[in-house]
Length: 132
Image 1: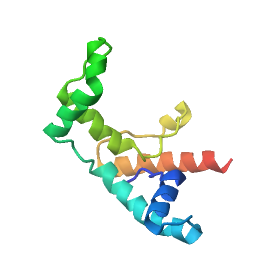
Image 2 (image 1 turned 60 degrees about the vertical axis):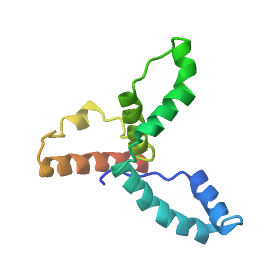
Image 3 (image 1 turned 135 degrees about the vertical axis):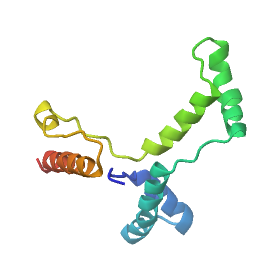
Image 4 (image 1 turned 180 degrees about the vertical axis):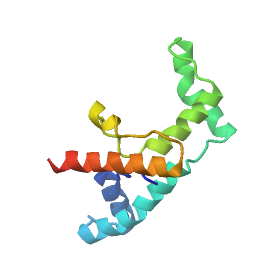
């Protein structure tokens, strides 16, 4: 995956406390992070698609009150898409705002080479921005 995955420290600490049953030190945090990083990458690339039963549960449990008040209408298909997309982007670092001067450098082509070049340009921009 070309996008950077961000694992919140609060999640690392919570998992470490649960697994190790004590306050985590830096070694424990690193051990947990070594697992969570690829696990979240995998989840971002392969989100768990809710089953029909899970969609029905979400529909009845969480949306029914909103529907009764006329606040929203969400079909089962949309619920599934939202739940899947949330997993896909939950831990992916946000793309930086790219100024027009950088956008003109991007090719936007469909080939693997074009995407890799664009990705490298954006990564160089992001690193430059972080180094300030």
